[in-house]
Image 1 (cartoon, rainbow, N blue to C red):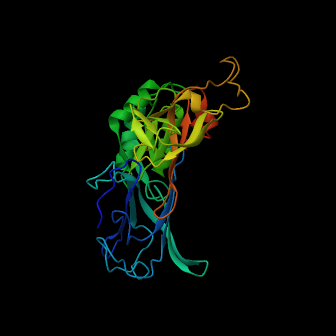
Image 2 (cartoon, one colour; image 1 turned 90 degrees about the vertical axis):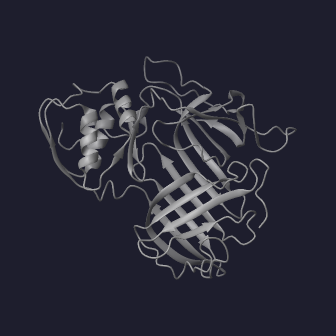
Image 3 (cartoon, helix red, strand yellow; image 1 turned 135 degrees about the horizontal axis):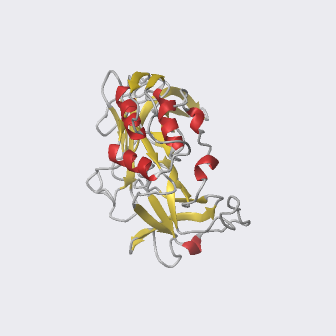
Length: 362
């Protein structure tokens, strides 16, 4: 086995783990510069205003035995892989993680698998995952809460009393709710309240009433404000200079932009070399793009009446969406980021539900 790469952004490192309900754990991992590793691709989407994150993994030529690594000798076509099994992807670059402690990009349950042939030559195992089904559509709540309970107390009770308990970051959720301004009435319950049914609409209602974006990861409910973000600045991005050599990190700036960032109505979208540091988790992280590299929109998008002439072009954005795409034997190894400027009234424009999504009407 050759040694790991010592060149930034060169030498991919990855590990795809499938944990079946029965049988041994399956690991498809990189082998230094991949002389014997199985090829697989991934397409993972994370959005701060979408309850169901999805991911697709395609493993090529999986009908034979794995020749190296922790799962050497295992045949993926013969392994029992079914709905509910847990899939975890860790990915990055060898230079950034020389000890092999790769960050997790995705953890979720398998929804279904497909076996097919590509161009009658390559046999493929396609794994499609949906996140948070156990916490949302397959969950149940039957509980009560006394009068004058705060919205944070309600969120705690809903999460803890659900049939499939939901984890929340108590300090972060409490901070987000306290900073937001409720859209109607007092934040405390005027009377006792009963909860019965799916906990998802109740948590969504609390988020909507406080103008928060809310979403689920594998075991946790997240909620955060786009108007008052408290997440740290993860990175500042710029393109590689034609005379400046390969992608690198110079003076706190990551030179890994692919193409040109595009200003949108609410912020910016851009593509970079895969960066596992950018994750859609509360508190929502922030990224910066040097202004001179952003392609400005050809028209000035108007703000709501009376709030200003147009959405500004700024250099710092709140990350509300990340799409990770990769091919272990191809060119694709990217993160596509959707960033929003800190603007008012953005929650409704993202398609968030109304306060009436609470089935009991509070």
